[in-house]
Length: 114
Length: 115
Image 1 (cartoon, chains in turn orange, yellow):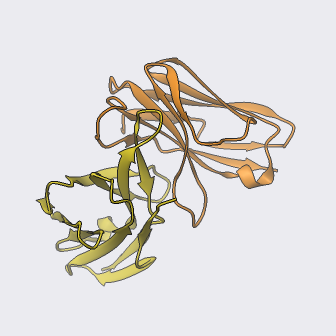
Image 2 (cartoon, helix red, strand yellow):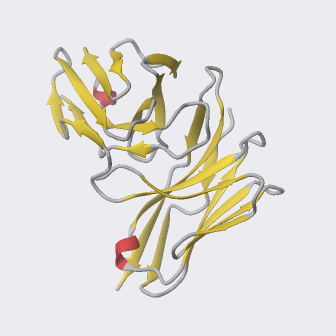
């Protein structure tokens, strides 16, 4: 049990579909993150939220739309994705964004775009 | 931009040997470094961290060494076990424009432990 739960674990969708990824953390953290992990590439930061407010958007295409309704939940809404968006999407949390502390990761959603 | 990289993509060792995984970083402003372990089908798991005011930190069977002069970080695993087989990432952390401390990850080294 990592304290950070992601659903679904696997998702296959067509380029015209709309789907959402969900992340929930039970650690009492205030900062949450979305990362993209592709084969043979370093983890890529996508978005950062702190106390429900987006503080970082790492030049992510608008077909990815994050939502953070509260400090415990984070969503990534997907629409009209491209084949190159197939990857493992990881959610992470940390106590707060203004301190240097390790992030706690979920086990990710494996996304495949047909 | 600045980046973090790993010297070796794959490291194979025998069970019981000591393992050393190396990492080079280039952002001299980074002041916090983390090692993560990622097993197949799972997310990265925190192993050990070190702040820039230290040059060595020990945990249970793991030691992290930081050489700020040459911007080099290493992870030493003592008496490596088959359960240590995984991909290991180093990350350096610096302050981003939005006020968050953001880690930058290396590509990872795959550690394979042979029984």
